[in-house]
Amino acid sequence: MNDHEDMERTEHHPFERNKGMLVVISGFSGSGKGTLMKQLMENYDYYSLSISATTRAPRPGEQEGREYFFVSRERFMEMIQNDELLEYAKYVDNYYGTPRSYVEQEMARGKDVILEIEMQGALKIKAKYPESVLVFITPPTVEELIARLRKRGTETEDVIRKRLEKAAMEAEGIEAYDYILVNDNLDKTAKHLNYLIQDQHMRVRSQIAFLERIRKELRVNYAYMNQ
Ligand code: 5GP
Image (tube, rainbow, N blue to C red; front, side, top):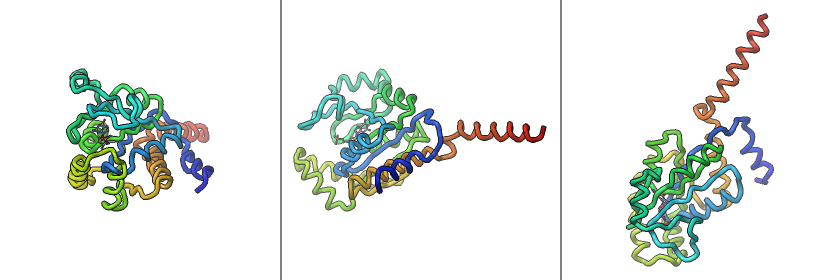
């Protein structure tokens, strides 16, 4: 598919972008979802990626404020106390949470905000925001998953084992998600993900303002023709 077709596909609906959507992306550690998010942000300008706060140490190459806000446990607890987090969860010995203010600000600007978070957080978001869309990303096979975790080279075998154990647990909860996407090819999966999200704007319940306008115009025209 070329860029032109891609644009047509995403801009074919006439709806106003009054308020953005909340999109939750989860996937097994090693599903390639981080790279997928980068691709999505580079290709389309109507998304904003939420940067989480975490108590885990930065991996080599990670930058403060780009991958995460790296905070102390004390600061994280303070954020919880002050209601600064939209949701948070403990994942393999560390805390991760979504700062509230950025998400609210970006949605108000009409951006679709992407939260790349794990399953417990995803479920909390769905409970608070039933209109949010939950997408689960998976590699084609478990063999591929293990290979990707090893290739990363930044985790010890013990951490890899813990992440696989976590993946096995998470696999039991995927039914709570709205969509599952197999990440077998980065470009293709990024395009699919974009279609999937943009098509959500066509849900009737996302377009109440548009519907109201059409109804009003119909009434006005009908009244005019009956004069
Ligand atoms: P990692 O340490 O590999 O960067 O992330 C571990 C897990 O934490 C991933 O599944 C990631 O999606 C999740 N995660 C990252 N930020 C957040 C967050 O703000 N909230 C929750 N609930 N999970 C998060």
